[in-house]
Image (cartoon, rainbow, N blue to C red):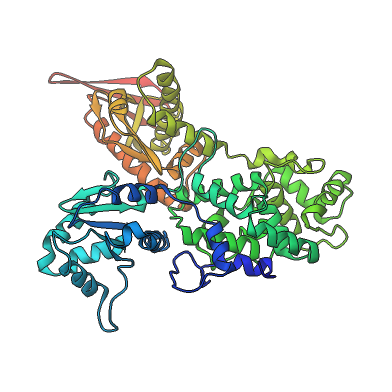
Length: 549
């Protein structure tokens, strides 16, 4: 390999690079192509598509669809370059392109489909899901069968099998191959882990590591050298993957191959150290979402005391020993010339290294403040729903969640305007009229039959099934946002405007329960804190009684 720098080598990661994952060019290969090939991770969707191509029939139309930057063109280009597929298939690599300057992408698709017949070789098309929907609406009338097949696929998208078939069309969708999965061993993305390993593994065949070693030798003070060395640590991989998964769950942020590579480029080549770059950089879509998880925003007594002592320059021999251990990582903090923000950067470093041992492990003092216990609890409940078979131990574990976390949180939220009901677990606040609060007894419990018989776990969350008395409620999706809100409600939290999205879902759930409660034959009226009246219907008679408050 000719003498290129780490900065040049990592340029293949950048979205703006001519070597971007979505860029397909025909030219003589050079070292940058070899660097790009080094990163390649074959995804499950490519393996499944390859198996299907081996048995595809004449006249079939096979759509490879997803979001921009997934790598559709890259996959199809690889297939097109293989002799066994070149003659057997017709390719339309990118359905956002046309064949002439004045031709629209829809017109180009009309032309492609008009040239395709039952006796034609199978047609393989790379297409964005949005363009699929556009063609279903605007495609030529003569292609109504294809448009109907697309409509059928889009309508069934959430529950579609992989691949989805309709008429002579077959759809392989990146959305059905999520890059993240809940894992009991906390390995949340085998794809991203493989990509990071390809980029950083320490062996003689890794071109990136070869270039890094040269730059480390001649220019060890370069920020990219320190950042790449940090990125090589396995514990850092795990922390980064967890943050990206949280961005997917909490921020609904899709992570395509292109955005992921650009994210890694920013981490290493951004203006600061990797732990600061991770939370600053408004031009990067993933950074904008991950920045909300900045550990420097945490406020605990211990962290605040650390910031105060550090910025005042107070003596801390243990910290000095730890900072000296950062030297092999080429990371420098000047205790004599503390600048605003240095303490925040150190907290981010402690957080980033929480799974790594370094020096005297000073950073481990703060590990308990950075743990992902809520995220791990969410993963545990997800697995319980997914694997529920009615086993008594499973049922006990899941019942603890339903009784003490889910239903308790719902009850606290529903009764938040009636604090006198906080200990009345089976009473549900229905409203207040003229200063009198009205409640009804409600028995909310898990719907075990539905939990066992339904597919309750999805890539980004799980469905809960409840009964009010004997009445089954429709399933309700519990995402990480709502799960976190329920946890905080049980801890005495009062919701605010920042919880808007989760509150909307919780309001809908409370309304479902309230509708059932309104038909109760037993109602209580709270007139102030101490007088309680009870109205009970029995056949045609309604009895009123006064109770102690």
